[in-house]
Image 1 (tube, helix red, strand yellow):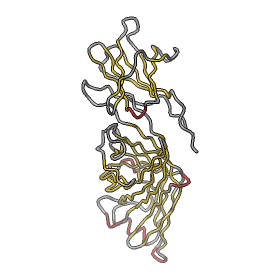
Image 2 (tube, helix red, strand yellow):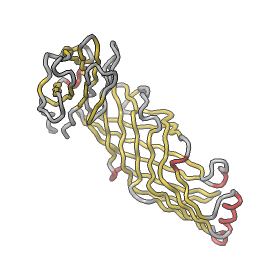
Image 3 (cartoon, rainbow, N blue to C red):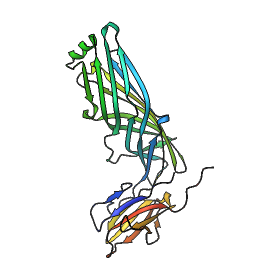
Image 4 (cartoon, rainbow, N blue to C red):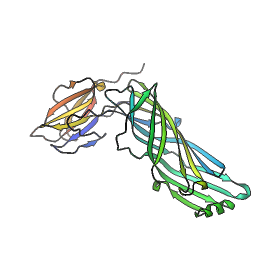
Length: 307
């Protein structure tokens, strides 16, 4: 799959940076380049979510495929031994339905619809974790839930629910719940050139009534397989009347282009990039006649074909 060009927009000496196709960072002088991005898309055929409703000692489960994505970052200077988790979003592809039958004690049925698990701090830089023997463990990942749980209780089960000051039939908006935490997100990352596969799984738990944990809980078990391509992350630093483009040197098959407007033709950026041990940089003057510019990285050589 051909990576999309990385695009950044540089208004004339503006303090902020607008971007399209992928966000870039306006870097302060002396900062290191942005890290390699690794967006990964879940394979629903190899990813699943099992939801389990537990009331007292009885549990009932339902399993369906899972959709979504993750975004990892790899440092330019140590891309084969560390990784960070930038974003997570998992979405159920179908309604999950469970039923608990207590015989003469009644029944409790529940349906979980439009369930989404997402990173609660996706916009915040996350620390790099060791990547050893293909295994990366991301600890204490903050998450938020979205979706609705509808439940119905009959017979004596309804009485139990009412004792907790809940109606026998109701809908719970999971989006109103506070942040949850995945204590340990264990993954396995393998690279074949720039093509990546990430597998892993985790569990989460949400009480039906947070102040009445004995009433019952909803558990979730996620297993996933995701695929994606390493992508360069172009950053822009404005200083001393120039613009400095920076990206990881491992993407030396990409070259920068520029344009003054998105509806205008793209042209190769002026100048020859300089290389450091980990980065590739290109310093450009700010033109008086065209002070606003857009920049992107585009592959200059085709990716190697698989054998």
